[in-house]
Length: 177
Length: 356
Image (cartoon, rainbow over all chains, first blue to last red):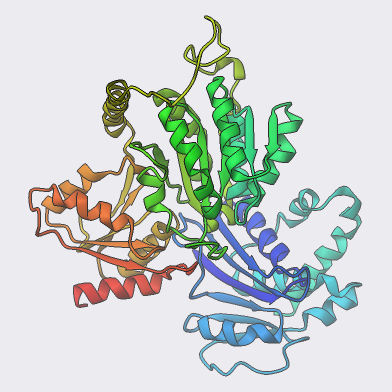
């Protein structure tokens, strides 16, 4: 099993955290992982992208150029994600911010209203975690069963009170697929 | 017992490996894409009561390395391409004074200020002695975060063993990406090799210098050093081979481009084609003898680099000394400017060459 995922959105949406948590959990599940982020110099609003690979064997190129799955967190990212997606690949679209449909017909398109679902839980900032839940359900590549323990080491103690909401966001994302 | 696997950036893994290898003095100056390494050393060296100095420039940093190395201290500096150019004078002095040090280049694209994306255009500078005068130093090119940690750790031992600098030539992707890494064990500083040649190590005052003004004496010193280089070639040449036996065409690539080439080998296999990968791990000494052997067996090569073609010259020199000299087919595919080739385009180039 090798799952190559391309993650795209704008700075501030938590794309980089999403990618890091995805590979962190995958590593704890015994998989090989690579995570290569690229983002603009802006603190918020610039591009934020990540090439992420998880596999049960040694990973060749860490650069994802023909993704099995893509995460489209905002409208600007849709054309790129659509263009590079593998034939028959999966596109998970944040339908809260992306109101147009992809043009390609060979792709498996999953729409998840990440921002709305996150707001129901308490804050639009959980949108990336909703997306990660959806990615886990859609690909089956990373189970995320060790996420709670990972979050405890990922966040400082003062943020631990948000962990239950993060876990709820994951569940909401799973349920949306 | 092996430690638990950690998720780390390449830059941070290099820093931690250096600390564990017994690096007691780090001198650096910020530059993208190696900043996490300098930051890591700032945070962790002082905690361990070791020396960290953010110098006023790259030139100052490399001269501080010279000073620390002359006292027998395990020392390191790191930078990225433009900063590495500034350090070349100091590296020449280190080599001229037979001083061990670890130098890390997390290379970006050039020339000039260039860009901050990954590049492999520093190969000539790294492997040919980028400063003035007749010299070489060891150069190792990691392909992963794990190998970046392992080679950095070992580089300190090899630098001490051969009394010369050892360079880790990574690139922006190796430095910036995160992978799982099992870190090597922490060295007891008391267990590090003794250096009776160093200043301040007893036996009276000692002048550690690269300056010899009598031509015959300087020539003799250079010849002794070059005899040592021959020993290094025999002992420290490293490479990895993947699917060479069956391969109709063998990629030759190091660092990040070797990962891309490996991806192309795997894509080819799915399509029923047999391609191989020859990955130099030591760039100096370059694994010429093995390439010459493969050329003599009739293997064809495609060098893949993130440059306009630098390592490919070493491939051509290597096969020129083979039994089938002149007949060996060496082709080149490169991207530059910070562009990383995709495994699909590398495979397409292999198909074009093979007419498949």
